[in-house]
Amino acid sequence: MTTFYCWDAAGLYAGTKEADEDGPLPERSTPTKPPKLTGSQVARWTGSGWEKLAAAPEAEPAPAPDWPALIAARRWQVETGGATVEGIQVNTDRDSQALMTGAAFAASLDPDYRIKWKAATGFVELNRDEVIGLASKVRAFVQACFNREAELLGAVADGSITAEMLEEEWPT
Image (cartoon, rainbow, N blue to C red; front, side):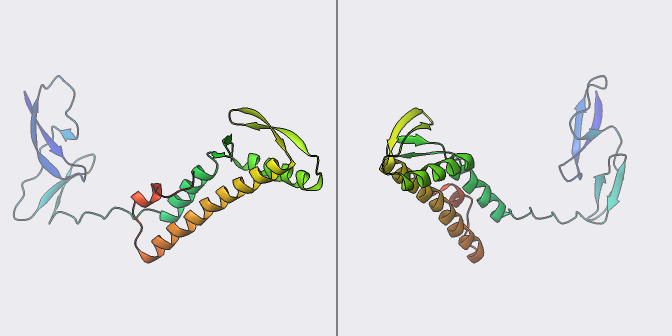
């Protein structure tokens, strides 16, 4: 058995482990003994040897979350993830939104307009009023996603944002 000298996630000396000298090194360990320490000194592993520090360094605070980016990514996920409108499971990715807008425009010009719309679960037949209604509700869903994003950015601004809020109150 051999004594190995271990370090923690910050690289600071954390004690010893005994292991078979022919086996693999224990995680975060070396056979190299750390220097003698006095008082508040600590030893830190550099990757090639130990260095002596006068005291343990202050732990760096975890970086603050990039709330605006996290919120925008969550909004995008909800917005483009689909919705059920009038019992129809509708794709709401950007291409589908554009196609629905075009269909609604065509329907607004032709009172006899009828189409077969490919929903997430298959084709559905829609008349003029149904196309316009579906497009209006999809648009309202998308806008509700942006409204929720704006609410969450307000919570970032006033310091009340929490990780839980990122998952709550999105439109469905």
